[in-house]
Image (cartoon, rainbow over all chains, first blue to last red; front, side, top):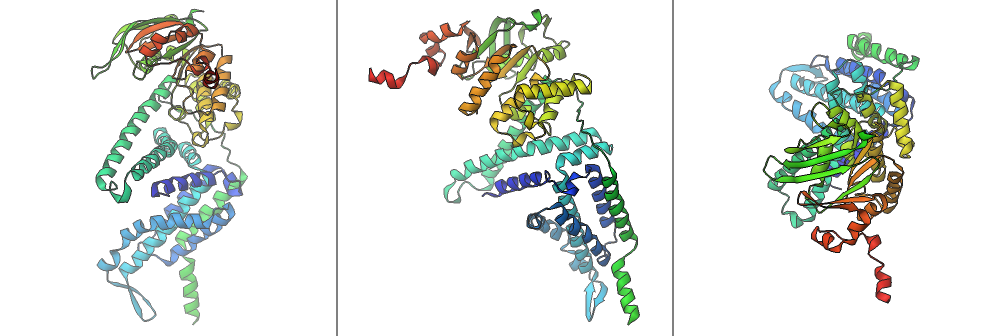
Length: 269
Length: 251
């Protein structure tokens, strides 16, 4: 399958996951959004040389993935796809930051290496949290809760429209890609020039479609206001979910159990 | 009831690039009529339809919907009266779920929430798609999408339905179903299409457009018997009026 087509099917799959029936799926989207936001805020707020204090945060994905029944293989594949970006961000840290930050037995570890490790761990945690959130809430659920959290409506609607039309657009891209492949035997015609024109056409088609969608909106009396009413109920289980995780994340931010245990053990020697 | 009337007088439309889309069309469609607008590609069918809903402003001439001339001021009322169903349902279904889409129009009309709900459910059940209410549009088949697109317009309770190529991309069964549904509607219907058999089934009157003007306007069956006219306008008799090719060979 061509890469574009695969990405499209993957997105489709992620969307289908969000229709699951687990206890986590049934929670109010606001509870999940809030929890993941606190999680991410805590994880990114650590000092750049921090490694050990971040490790306990893996407890959250480790619990959520099995409870929500998300296939770990799928998440792993998505994660590996994004990993190079995170590596690119931190790859030069070990080169520029050569001061010794700590000793692992007889080996001196440079500050750059530690901060590189820290970046990778943070990336892993936040990416996992984001995947989990989308897989158990669905994109529209997230948009709805953003709106309830008083994020400007224009922004939420933009996101919703983006999500609605990403399927149509990627279908179009897949079709164009197929048409090109069929007529580019032996690799000719797969070059940058053709690709550029393909993207250009896609943009023009998108533009046309946007105009037609706008027409369809106007013909149904659109005046700039979106009405999406969804009975969201914040019940006891939602409250329990938030009250269990959020204080835990904050506590782990203030108190580092890994170092504490280390100190305890070393102190005991 | 005069508000179901569509009247177009000396309509001329010239696009900004200088092409003449419509070159002086006059027609009057009365309450409860089913009218087909046929003609070759580029004859001006879509341009004409876009005038009925105020997407295009005439270069000269006028469009009247019911008692009102179509102007910027009367646009909201005209858009409530004329329900427009687009060629590509993907353009018309832009909300997260089918229900949201069907409720979109009534919500914009400022109707109370419980009435919006009643209308949405009523429109869904008239199209036989209640079970799809919570589905996102991209999970639907073409036939389902088409019916959902019609439901989004029905919920606004329009008096006039304008359909642009309603049967493109449908399999024979879905097409037959759609024709059945459209036949039951008592609305004034204006259908632009290349599906000439659909015209025979639904529309008692046919308007033939050619090069931006009305070439013929009359009872459907008479128009389809005029072979000279059909050839001139790049059309042909509907299959149902062509006689059986298998039997014809045997004779």
